[in-house]
Length: 181
Image 1 (cartoon, one colour):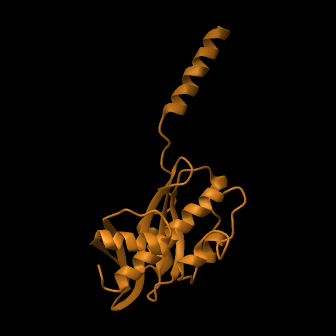
Image 2: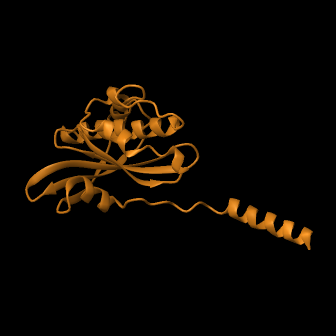
Image 3: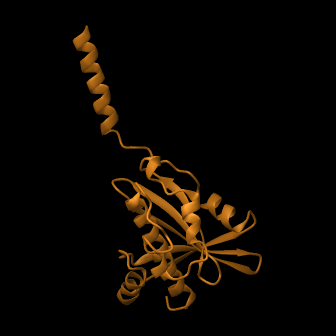
């Protein structure tokens, strides 16, 4: 009987490890936009198709990997007042994905960074007070780890990933607000 219990435990453990991890959605895109811009803010979905030169320019400005030719973003407004742009960025931190909403104000500075989904262990998730340090930053170079965004002890890869997402959003925001897309 003891052998049967061990075999059953090993089978159950193997099945648990083989099963894909469920995505841990913390906020929906719409919830995050309402949280950042207010409940009556309206998000209009836009899609931009980038040229090779624009992709290279975003990659260079962000100092982060970028190869998307098609970019979906959101113009946020309340009545006739533009409130900014929002980008959803997803990437792998260590072995699992994170999904962030990076909200920009009308001037192109970061208004907020919200974690929409986090699939890594919670110990590696950047705390809200660390994410708030990006607020009002508009220069991608200051968002490199070790500058305005200090290193996260025990979560270095998370800090780098969030910083790269923020820098991409700033570069894309500058491109889209220039009207050259």
